[in-house]
Length: 166
Image (cartoon, rainbow, N blue to C red):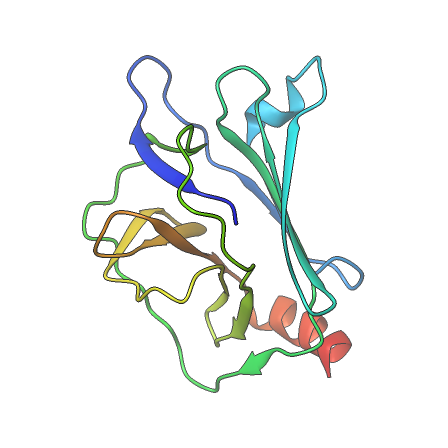
């Protein structure tokens, strides 16, 4: 289990991530800080059945610098929009690997293809708050845990990804 915590950046504004959808790796989200790393990132993964969510963190400050989804066997396809609305859209939010981890539990990974977002849930907790700004939003539970990541996509990107998933 990977614990993420959302923090407000104090000295550096967080730059918008690059998002890439392709036929082989459905989505890769890369923050500009990843491109400037001179050493390997800290790697964590969430695996479920044959699916995998790779999370890469800055080796010194533990900031999330890249997220890569490799599709699980099962993708729930919804024919309606998710339309998440951030309660406090803050472009300077950073997501960091929590230093003090909770009890280890089994991995959980659930992928849903909405019309407007590809949503990856990595906890069974309910999302009560959306954080961040488009194209990447994170869902937070009532106890403050970051439990999902949603990435906005176009109709063409959705069609390309779902063609592989079916």
